[in-house]
Image (cartoon, rainbow, N blue to C red; front, side):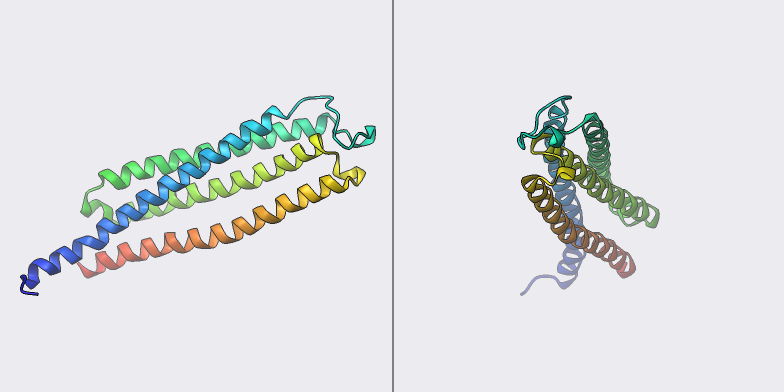
Length: 194
């Protein structure tokens, strides 16, 4: 083209940083949306914690005891706390990324804080998923029948749930870690260029 090479150079220098901000903001929005979806599942699970409920197995020895209901409530509360922590950290980080000036965005201390907060948000969401899965196993035991009474349907439901969640986490965690480390490297590369 016939444009000024200096002007195009300065534009291309600014673009990657703006793209990084947009990527950060989009990732944080997605994280909050996923956490909101899981939080709904928490309240559905909490509504199942009733004492003395008969299971669908229709055998007295297969009915869940008070220990299952108690464990369900504890795990649901912990998973809710994890999702809340993840969402609040992600929201705070989004505000930081949005209002941060270019010099502050590239500042090493801010990069470290941003990296730590992003890791905290992602891992809080992962642990929320784990506690939610454990609590859903108790929902299965309350509604379908205890695993200890060898209820085929309960074992199938619990096995499918655990297998699918493990598959989802085995995809989610490596991709999120790669995205975080790549974004940190890209900011550092931008700093080194300047």
